[in-house]
Amino acid sequence: MTPENLVKQINFIKEIDKIKYIQRKTKLFNSDRNENDAEHSWHLAMMALVLAEHSNASIDLLKVIKMVLIHDIVEIDAGDTFIYDTQKNHSNTDEERLAAQRIFGLLPGEQAEEMIAIWEEFEAGETNEAKFARTMDRLEPLLQNTSNNGGTWNEFGVNYEKVHEKKSIMKEGSNTIWDFAEQLINESVEKGILKKG
Image (cartoon, rainbow, N blue to C red):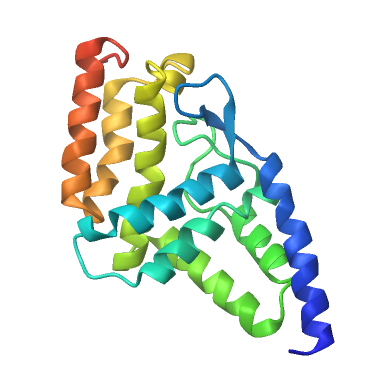
């Protein structure tokens, strides 16, 4: 490793510390405190480690972990877009792509290319790894909202239909986890913490 590469890597490490300040709408389990992006990414990595056996297909677990650790780094520049936002699309945006190029571009060439490629793969959601990583990304806030008596669903007036629509992508990565998640969603309606219509 050349000293030049080390300087670039250290600068990247310093830059991504900013992810700790990006507040998400969801709150920690059984808590009133908002989660930040760093906590979210760490939690997804642990979830992937623990739940990998439930993937619909064989996956490269290290790649999944890389995906969930870096997928929200672009929010340092682009900000967090709430999945149920009615004004701004939650899907991949030009703003996020520019952020990926700037932030990952701080790294030495090959590392930058790898990080951007992994981020793009996650966003495209087409590979087995991306499908499972996205399942983790959709499961965590569901667990948080059910632990917080509806949490952001109630706070932002999100209904059953919208939750079911946004969460159903989980079945692409894991039928088992989706079955569990759908049961949680339905139980949330029965408990009155998620409204229909």
